[in-house]
Length: 588
Ligand code: ARG
Image 1 (cartoon, helix red, strand yellow):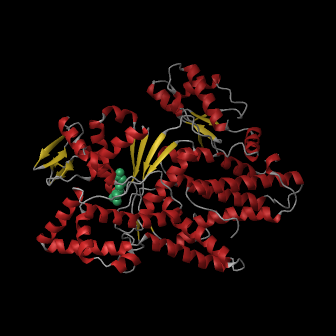
Image 2: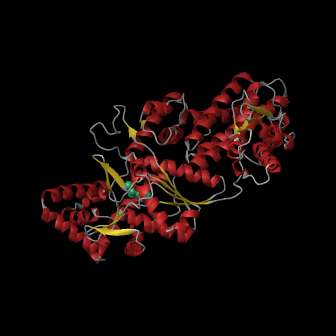
Image 3: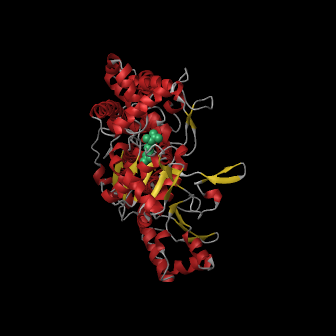
């Protein structure tokens, strides 16, 4: 068992020995400021608070029942009732030796694996994927990788927007103004053009709008010609999506688009009506406030000129069509029946937070039992900005297409790699540039707190110094070069570690925190924790490497011990980057 887990479970048992009925699941230990120790627990303070006990007294009582001497030095009580733990060197060394033998890589599989559905990426058909799609795609993929690594059962589902009123206009355009040659050259651009032209015509001419609507009605009624065209549009879009997902290395278990749920939308609305959750209003059907929340927190109310007025979630339009919310309700019903998830995670732009607040509340009213067992989380994120402080656009003011952005990333990285490593053959430089370029874009997107907007900067994300993917991939490759340089026989499996220098100890302890970091990412759904952990790891490795000679170590035993530290660092870097969806190269 990893030392922090051992401390945690021993501490939980000690708490139970003092307070037999305490819920110990919240008794956790976390890494702390090295001034105080290696790990700390603040859980006794909140426990004391809820029970109106003196926290220091509780800590003292717990200490008398706590024996962690196998892994820790003497435990200290600090401040209002913190417990500080300092690892014994023997425990640290043994843990690293076990990792060197391949028994673990500083993380454990979850004791209670959860079933988690992750809904992410979800682009819309007949539109190009743009720079904004990197956000949901990258964050969602990093989360699915983290959860899978920790042993959870993950079902990733791409909720593609393949249904909706836009198809009326697209169908009309396809039938009347389609240019086959352009469609073959760049299908998405041609579909985009069809939509733009017809949309403008509809705005100007109500008769055109009627024509588009009747195409939509025919599609909804299952008209063979319209269904065939619609399917072709989906297939063309899917091809574009697949190319991009292939480049990004993103995989989904399912891609059940919105249209998949069509057969159930009518039933959902009927059920909501029967249960009194939705009601008719001005010909449409909507869900309104049930008055249980204070107006300020109630998403079904908006304040207009000082007055709270209804802001319902529509589930059926006055023309009989269904809404985004209706589809999400049918979708969740299907997911519950199909996978019985403990959690469903929606990785979607923060601009939809109002939708998700309403939808989650409707779910609670519609399926109160399921709402108790299935947790719904909206993993929101902010916008990508240009350096002018406005949403990131091309020079001419268009949205940046994702495919073109990825091309540019690879081209820019190729220039940098060619300057830095001119001696490498071109094919290898191209491959390094692909890894670095795509990694840079992904990493820059994962690094900020996901809810904040960030400024897109090529120079910053491609820099070889600083908290970037190139820096981390380079750190990995540099470690690999140590192994290429050393010629004697080194077998990590039988390494004995001697940790003496402060930089060795600091690095070793940081390696140990890999698992805790992964758990924090999984718990709070924040991949940026892992980015920062890896950046710190690379920094701690650098000070180790600058201060502790490896290949020129004073004796063979020290050299092998340090090589083992190098190898473990490389493995954690590689695993960590892979968990963020970023590849590595052995040389650069
Ligand atoms: N296709 C939607 C959009 O582009 C995102 C869908 C997100 N997922 C969901 N279950 N609502 O806005």
